[in-house]
Length: 521
Image 1 (cartoon, rainbow, N blue to C red):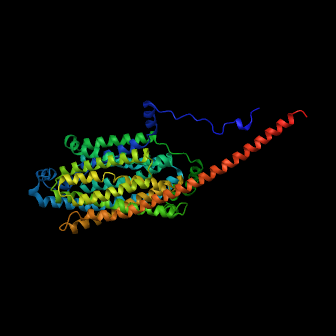
Image 2 (image 1 turned 180 degrees about the vertical axis):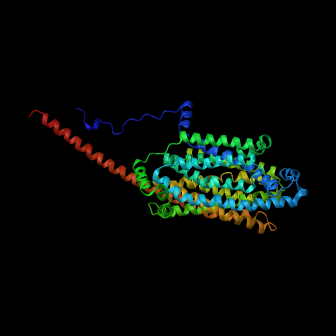
Image 3 (image 1 turned 45 degrees about the vertical axis):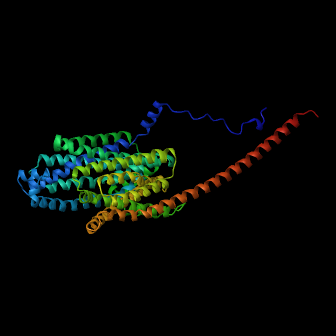
């Protein structure tokens, strides 16, 4: 007979086996889902951008304005200083069309995202949200090839309209981002989420310098058809890979309910229900444990204070470098590629070392990012030569980590059936912020140019102070919750220990009684 005392209190555990190189490669392969899809979405997008801009200028010059080939060739080659009147006329025409194009590109996706977020949460369908905007970009490439083929027959307005129309009706980048980050939150736990979100951000960031570096060279050597054809192939690969490898998580009960609602009321009526807009917006202001509503509002405020200055600087950065350092387009393209690569490296260090290995909280990553931004912003504003401008980029290399931290924090505030809504509000805030800060920074730069061209960077430095306070508050909340969790864990352990002691005592008494009964009297 085995008494209770002889049963081990804690089962023996084998030490974790170290993975071989092949096992590590297989682990990475198994965990790669949408990352190639995102990379092959960004690369052709940036790759075809220069060709699209050139095509629009080309059409405006040769078709709309009906200038001679000699004049238009000089303008496209940027050798047309003797044709300043013609260049001004073409740029004014394009600028006017860019205005309504940007409205179309932002207004329709901003409207759709309010319904798409709720719909993807109800159905669990993230794949269609990720892939549909990529199909829209593929249609843009095909439209551009048709505009090249019918060059003289179709004016610039047609090319620019379809350049905006197809991405707009398919949801645009805002829908892809919503689907991608909601999907990552669905398939990852809280411990690995920051790392997975960071990897996705890196894929979106890494595509920029690759496409930017190749765009000018490819356009020169293979022309419009080559660039748009190559971009189409990459989009098709992105769509095919995503269709095969991205799998929506099953939500059988909810899906049946949604199908029943759609059949009873009609899909469009069910999809465009105003109630879903209300539900989406209420996610931000919904009360919950651990100051959920306060944290949600602070996340959205941080987006405005972080993304706004970043977007504003982007709109005026080229003009700033031309004015202060007399850079041409080639020098600026080198700087822009360096800028993206350094920020990519900083984000990689943050997610692989600070988050993955050292297990630092998201709020710490946010603090590092914003401190880096403040110092780098001041260095950029005070820069008086090209070397100092490049050094300023190195100083603010961790700046790109803020959005990884914010996306991770926001995804941990909501349940799985609210991820789409929260991500939709997050991305909508980005769009609205860009609509405000783009014109604002252009106005600030224009008004302060003769005083000091770097004033816009000093404004960014001031606007970055509130996010530091917000991330500091998030960190204090994290530490407070950790203390509370440790106390609860200690109490649970004491309770379990007391129960185990009582059980062992009872078991021992029972064993003694059994032995006494068997003893001969």
